[in-house]
Length: 107
Image (tube, rainbow, N blue to C red; front, side, top):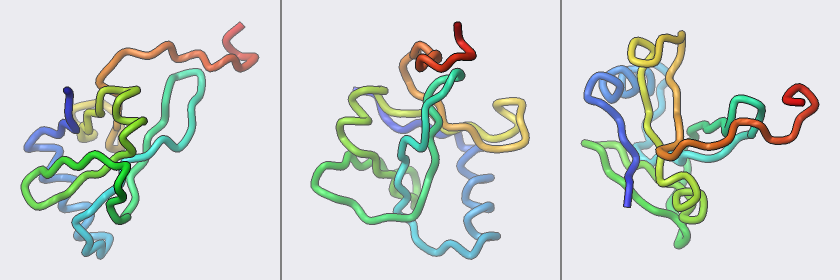
C-alpha cells in the first residue's frame, strides 16, 4: 500500500514552517478540505490519532489520515514550493483522480 510521501527537502522546509508558526505538536492530520474542478484539496492540522486512522512517521513527524480517505487516494505526496512550482506546499493524492466534481465550470 502507498504511503504519505515527503522528500527530505520538503520535510526540512515544512519542519521550519511548523517551528516558525510555534506549532509544537508532531502529530499532523492530513484531511480532505474540499474538492473542486482541479481535484481534491487537502490540508493539514494538528490532531490526535483515532482508531480509524493510518499512521506514517517521517523522521520526528507523525502524519495521520483517515483510513477510508487513505484507501481512496492511496495516500498523498507533500511537495515544497520549489518542488511544485508554486508559492506554497502542495498535497496531492498518490492516484490520479478526475478533477471535475460536476461544477458548472467543467461543462
